[in-house]
Image (cartoon, rainbow, N blue to C red; front, side, top):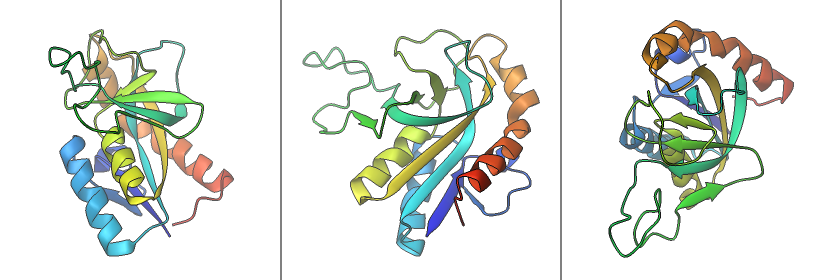
Length: 176
């Protein structure tokens, strides 16, 4: 069984098979755990919007590498940016592909962590799936370029990606 998670109904206004987590890593973690307990899925699919740090990216992409971009303990025992102290999981790499840095802030300027896109939920869901031995697929629609215009661009483009996601879902035969 597959379950689908999006942060906001605004990202999937016409796709009623999505479960809505709310914004941020904590809300995404809670929703992923609830869905695992209730449905015992084999795969969790996350779809949502993301800001591109690479201006050559547009449209819908599949993310396969996940980082916690707002974990910064570099001042403690020489940890790296994005590394959670004393945690064996600091990055999640499923296969070669696009990288996503998740954090609990909306990015509208340059960040230090090198990733292709930024969002606010994917790393959390990916980690819950990894710890629970559940497959994870993640698709992000590029809504903005994580710059000073990100807020306006996100609002304008938020709803535009669901059709692209639905086409990929059907082409790859990803069922409910």
